[in-house]
Image (cartoon, rainbow, N blue to C red; front, side, top):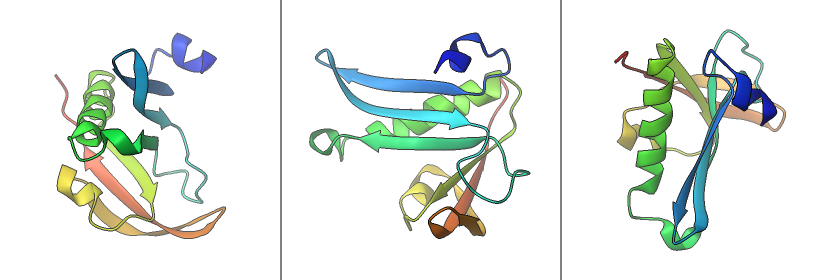
Length: 116
């Protein structure tokens, strides 16, 4: 977290969603999300929306936020490791292939960002 406060290249970075003074979601960008492909970086991580705030598009807004942040810092491609199928595709992420993680095989996705 401290590194995110001083980073000039945009990584790491952390974002939260707040509703009525309560944190209801969060997302981050880190160098590597515990997989064996260091060339596939940086990684979106810790995507979370609390259950009572799901189904309202908050995850999509958090994903848009990290993509915009990355683009502003000249990062052209973001990567994401997940076991979800079908969720990230709705937000324009493309499945690449399986990668080895500390928990076994997971799905690697990528998304191109836009420079402002």
